[in-house]
Image (tube, rainbow, N blue to C red; front, top):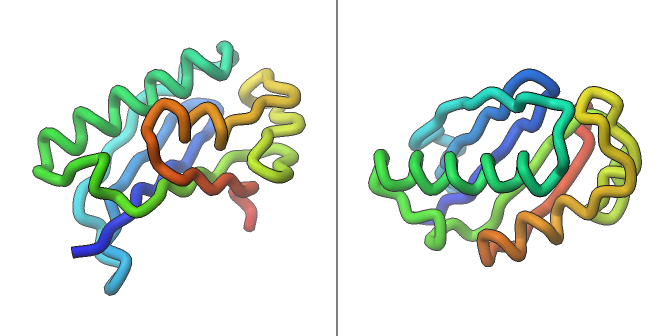
Amino acid sequence: MRYCIGVDLGGTSVKIGFVNIDNAEILASGSIPTNAPREAKAIATDIVKYTKRLADESGYAMEGALWMGVATAGIVKNGTVLAATNLGWNNVPLAMLLSRMTGLQVYLANDAN
């Protein structure tokens, strides 16, 4: 089965799901508090830790995902959060940070898109 990981990064919570690419079925999902504002590396570390935990609990390997998609509020361009007031971030290369931590291709977009 082909699946990806979806992340909704908000100011109060981070929602994470493993999604079947072929039929859009949510295979596993959960959420954790964001505890913003905090440094991007701390929030990214929480995202990765919880994704691994969710993978372990559900039987889907994080490393088996084809990619990770992250939606967040704020101004986003080329994998970088240029400004996100709710997170207290400016010029954070979030896609690169998460990619380095997970080994996955990470796509970043504004959550309104």
